[in-house]
Length: 245
Image 1 (cartoon, rainbow, N blue to C red):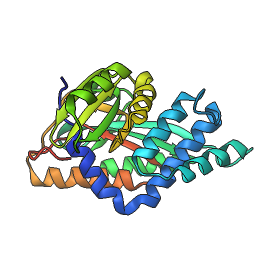
Image 2 (tube, helix red, strand yellow):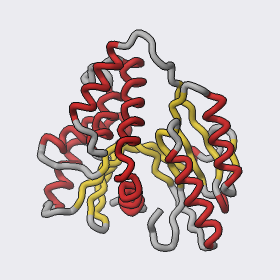
Image 3 (cartoon, rainbow, N blue to C red):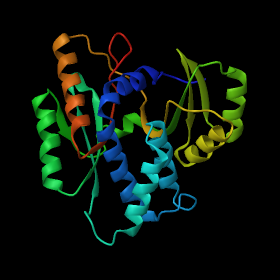
Image 4 (spheres, one colour):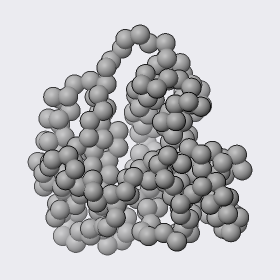
């Protein structure tokens, strides 16, 4: 029922970041804190916070850590004032890249992002230059481990999912962004445990890179962006010949 699979990219990202769990938790904690300050500490009324909590859980962030981040943010009168900033540009051979950041120093973050694009064969563009190539969707990945496909499909669609697709080793469930929390919660209540669950940007089309130099440069661009403390999310439409990232 769906188009291109995201599972290879999800697996690759998890393999690459398992050893950096502390950094992931720090970034998630910052995202939770900003969300709490903007919309309050109650996920029942702060739907964005509810979505981020599902994302944190799918990244194996312990419930105690999540609660601690929420309480700390709710009790802080001051603290760092983080700004949400989005950068758009191109990697080698026109690969579209979107970078979402949270930063307390716009000049530092902008300089770092521009440096990475320039160093690794890309260039920054104006806001909107590539985002039209992506659709914002809720994406829930559930590994195929003794799960009845038809039952899961009916559970997902009954909960309000837009699409359901069996892929290699997993099931992909997509939702409208506003329905993500509702669908994720309904599946969680039925005992399903996602490998990944978040509101993300899904490319409408993908670009393959065949030149080894381009592949190396694109890999380094993504690694440097994802390793930056101010970068929260990186989206792109690169697919190499093997279907991985």
